[in-house]
Length: 91
Image (cartoon, rainbow, N blue to C red; front, side):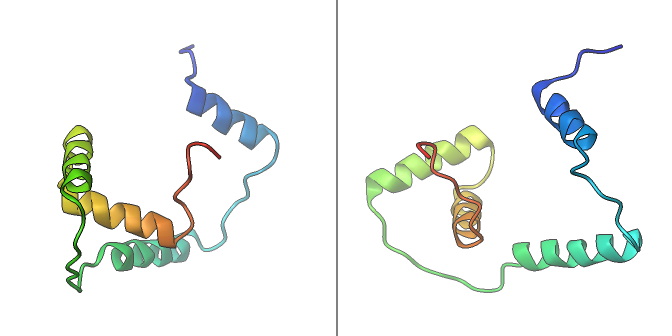
């Protein structure tokens, strides 16, 4: 049997603790969340902002490390912030 990684162990503990539940009408739920995902990533507006050169360079370097365009990184960070999923490492 293969050794489980940290995330896999956390999932296993969660399942064993009864934190998971079956979803009724799975196909309908999958479709619903697919629509949410499409709406989240639909880019239908343009925004121009002014930021410091230092911040832009840092964003570009981070995006390069992540292997994504820096505009995509900025969009992702903003989305996570407004949806309450951006967490401070110090918290």
